[in-house]
Image 1: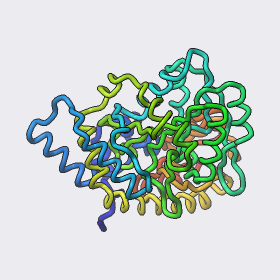
Image 2: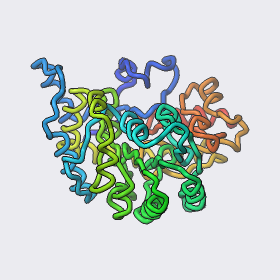
Image 3: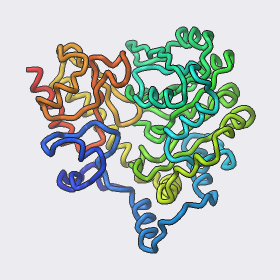
Image 4: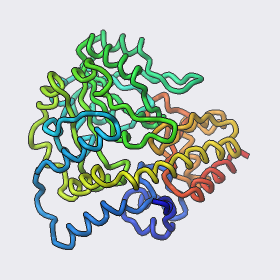
Length: 383
């Protein structure tokens, strides 16, 4: 595939009715919510068009095709041997994580997260009746790391669950096998369930790779359950389909506690699209990752030029950049000032936890021209 993916005309993008382009006025550049500025991958588009053509929009059926397609993709790309019988379909990653927590958390039980972290982790924990304990990530010269001493203390104090974001959103860290293995050993020592949100797994950028949590050790396969989807990598969030994956032994037993009716939240078209993504979307995704990697590098150059006092650790995975703008004295939520004065929509840093004060998240899954204009607009505020 040689055609560029992130080159859609702005007018075509603004014709969409999804959240990204309807939340703000037309003069705002929307680089916030995790939607990509791209058309559907051709195999997915063709599958959905065929379904609509024949009126195939009824009730979904679980026929094993989606589960098998995921297993084959995981084996080919991640050396992860998934038993299709241990894949459960749910509406989205949030549904899977909430139901797993509900099955394992009594009211008031502690659920550990590591901020800065995807904001719904907090609300999902509340819905499941848990109490959030934050053990923030550490940012060092070589990037972001788990605070293993802090996690040990939290696990020893009685935590029941750890919510892992792998790769990490918003910091873009592609966790290494040894890091995940150390986390698994801690969780096994204190009998903590690790629920791994791996929705960005198909999106390691050039120079990095994705390591599924359940592949790193026997301990990980005992304590962990993975929740993932094709939705971020192939831009399918509105179609509502995710997969919960377990390993043998206790992992399987824990995933089996999810109530069967939770699978009804998955959409029929979402299942069709997801099966096509896993089975036939690889070539398109390879091109997308090449372009996203170039945008990641472009963002670094733009920040160095227009926001030289900002802190920016280039993402290893995802299409999200985590910008430290605290040097500009724009307050705890610089995204608010940027929206009002530069007309660029970013995600507010504080929504990712207290460690996000002074930060903002930027979505670089757009054309290089849009990304350049956005950072230039923001940079003008710094002059």
